[in-house]
Image 1 (tube, helix red, strand yellow):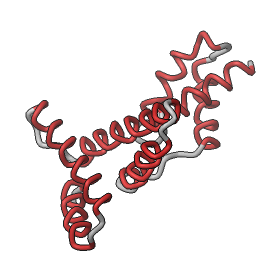
Image 2 (cartoon, rainbow, N blue to C red; image 1 turned 90 degrees about the vertical axis):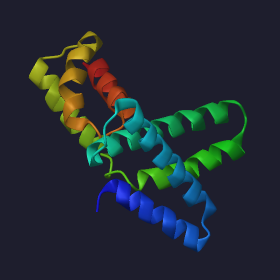
Image 3 (tube, rainbow, N blue to C red; image 1 turned 120 degrees about the horizontal axis):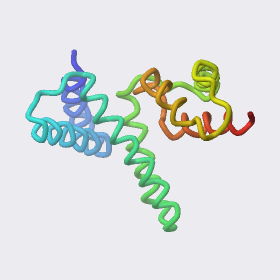
Length: 149
């Protein structure tokens, strides 16, 4: 079963069970996927759907931060609940320790000595971590490792 088929089936299940929040979140995802397909004039495969879902996760995280800054905890909580639903369709993300190991290897491979070499390290590291780790966390880890040198 493809990811799009899984989303369709889960929307139907959410409708049957009366889970309005899950239903609405999944419909938003379906709309984002459909919009991407229309914009690019293609039918997305699972990798393309995952890219759209990853973009939605990033959007939710940014919204949570914005709502918290604006003093709107109820809206931030709604975004968090949507985030949990969306992340359930993505592969498990790498934790900080795993990212640190790969970052240390990449730093050694490109002979990076300080923060100025961050672009080289990120260029080497991000293709390996695409879809497996949050880019902001990777950036933070690499910056931390390079600043220690």
